[in-house]
Image (cartoon, rainbow, N blue to C red):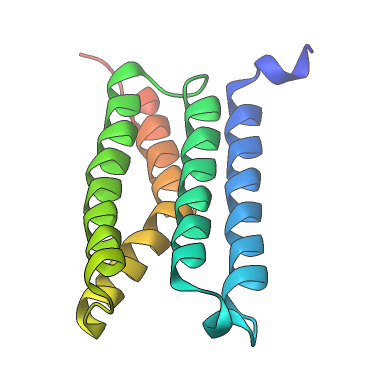
Length: 135
């Protein structure tokens, strides 16, 4: 496809896909009346799946848009944050309810990973690096 070789188009496709995943997750899995009736293990799996989906979309689109070290930042942020979330989730599965502050931290980290914020930040960083004059 001739139009897909455009780096900006790939970035916009990725932004649209991540925004759509974020929207669908919040509408169908969080902002519903039956959310609390869903077992916590199922919610954990849904959250992990949404993270993996956004991570995959980011890899697919950013590898065509950014430079190598920016992809390493993408991988590093996801790796560190997912490990933290897995430890929190395993503790919750093994010992039961975690405290409200820890749950809030986990929710904020999950929200950060599935929202388009990191993706947009990578795009801004990439565009600023390409537009700076070399000396």
